[in-house]
Image 1 (cartoon, rainbow, N blue to C red):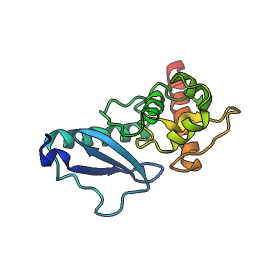
Image 2 (cartoon, rainbow, N blue to C red):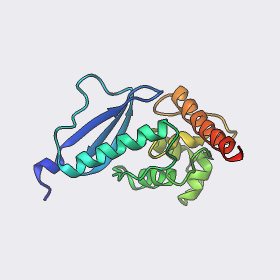
Image 3 (tube, one colour):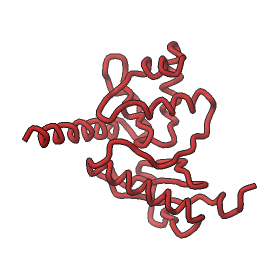
Length: 175
């Protein structure tokens, strides 16, 4: 049975071009990323076990590096709680490469449920760890931007940010 201190949730946030982004950690795993959520006093870094504090620091650093264009893939440990279908859909998001997009149908097919495109969309809408699990990279069959828990403006910004990072890196390599 986990000790009481391991069950404590700790939170922190990082400034990003899209506003403050919050991270929630429990038992040394990221369980949530929030847009526009943190308010004064929201960060609670002093509570929790040492491993959870380390994971929170790592998550905040990785998010900051992502927003600075220095990180393409996240390595911080995560924990997903949802139905088996949701966890499958969310896990598939990690396989969509930086700067790339996938459709809901492609995501549904990748988890062996090719006719479950609407259910995949609903699962993505409940993705508790956006950006780290990049549901912003999933678009409509025609390439259109559709729902995103952080709002379409943030989805558009994240996709443009990744394209900008890739473009600047291609330019640097050619120089």
